[in-house]
Picture 1 (spheres, helix red, strand yellow):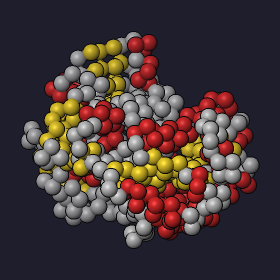
Picture 2: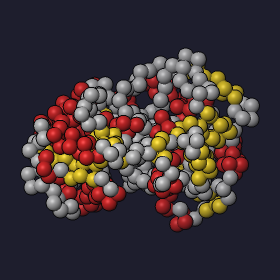
Picture 3: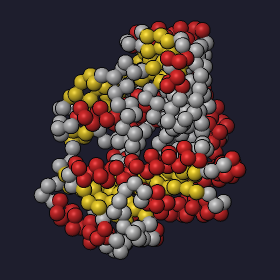
Picture 4: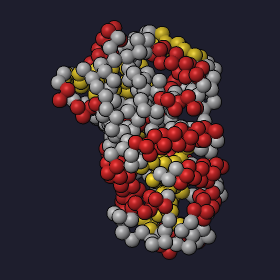
Length: 479
């Protein structure tokens, strides 16, 4: 185990990608599960805060410590086992998403969740129930976690396999590997029927593993996980489709999301008019009259790729006059070009934030599909009324928007914060969520009350106490 007491040696561990900064007394880097058990057992005995540190790619301050010790998982970075017959991959929790993709290259298998941030770790993905562009077809992280190995705040451990431990209606009772009994009651609440990552996931008769997925490291330290893989598609057709007005774009979206659509995408990503304007500075050849864009991918075969492309052309031509300007990708280099278009946008926004020297305000909200156009127009009208600069993109296949407000001074920032609350409240009123993929962390706790009653949040606290009686692990996340 490595221990560092000098703050100069662990300054990088005090922040995450949100730029939120915390403080801590020391950094510990364990190299075995036994060391983690020892650290947590001692922390509980001394009521000492422990904050789990992953890759630092989160946007809600989840890994940022507020005192006590930082527990870095960086030595848990090994691929343990690939079982091609069962299509499973066992990895330690600090293995990064890009490393999983590289390891599986050429195997004929792939891990469906694909968060935009490829440097994120599987432990962090489990903590947030992370998702990405392919979530439209395949679902988020939860669906692909078969088992997890967890060290609880008391120092006890548990291997939790999907399908083994279930709630009896709303009541859980099970024993740790060391024989300690844990029991608690789930709050009775209906989860939003959208892509969702805010607070604990609960439902009657649920599987215990699903409680840990999305718990933001508040219930235990995940040391390893078994992932479910799928067979790779033979061919993937990618396209960035440009639109000169948003009515046609939303009509296209509504039609392509139908189960009997001529072409069935695995991802649908959105770029608004301000996104296009921002990207023109770094990406050439964007059509001059383009105001909006959708990036889609369609799985096909080598034999049917020409037919799929022809069907896409005919289908798209009904909704945009810019069909001939569509960017197509059929090989790795072309796919990278389309991905570059998507990945340049957050970088361009970050440069604007640095230029204005103001804190970033960005939504992570999602609504039911039938309200996607109404919700988008509501957001845009708010921004225009307040004359605020904004950029909106996101996973529109799941009706999930990242609306970024670019404020230039404190007055604009204060006005933007009020609008931010209005946007989240509107999502909830439509049956949506305040966070679809990034979680609550330490920065969005105040907004959880827009989604859940005090009774439900108190129910979450009781779950936390059942696992963490001294409240030492990842203190400040969610609550």
